[in-house]
Amino acid sequence: MPAAAPGLIEGLARYPMRRIALRAKLTRPYWRGRFHAFGEHTIVHRPGSVFGAHKISIGSSSLILAGCYLSVETPAWDTAGPVLTIGDRVGIRPYCMISASESIVIEDDVIIGAFSSLIDSDHTFAEGRPNVMHNSVATGPIRVGRGTWLAERVAVLRGASIGRCCIVGANSVVRGELPDYAIAVGSPAKVVGEVTGVDADAPPFAERLW
Image (cartoon, rainbow, N blue to C red; front, side, top):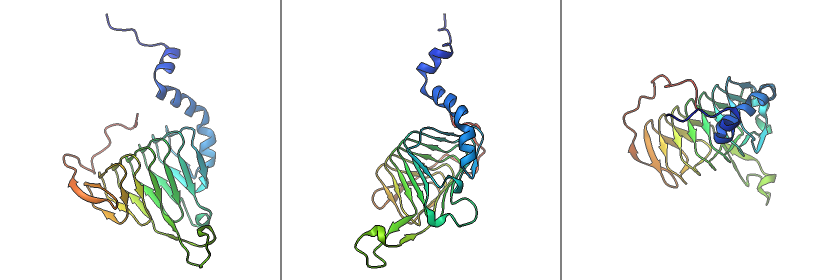
């Protein structure tokens, strides 16, 4: 005979995602009140920090797991509209850092591995002061195209534009442009192959990420 389906309590104990989804139902009104936009079924689970949430827009059915740092820095607060935009069905694994001082756009269906960072600014010594925190920063917008997968510990630097349905290997550093369907690795990341068998314009397989 097939095994009986687990009851509510057993299911919550056995499947962590069920616990995360249940907690998200309770916290969703709080996040909706803080973010510029916060889509249906989206989960922000125990973030490490959220700063400038009023300038952050998140689409529907996205999942941001524990320990992530989401920040729009104060110099960007006076700009119109959201500064950090995260699309639909985006998955961000634990302990990622996303810091926007000009513009970061993460399109639909992007998956970002744990401990990755997307930072659209660099510290400088532009004013000649010996502590970088006392000098201005240089900024450049970041875009990550639909369906791209960033593996663990990828660093995306200011001015980077990553195309659709790319794969960026673990521990890579991305600056500059990667075309659609690129497979890129290294520091700096260089194209080493091409993703095949996927259509970046295809409709989503499902409306939910999980």
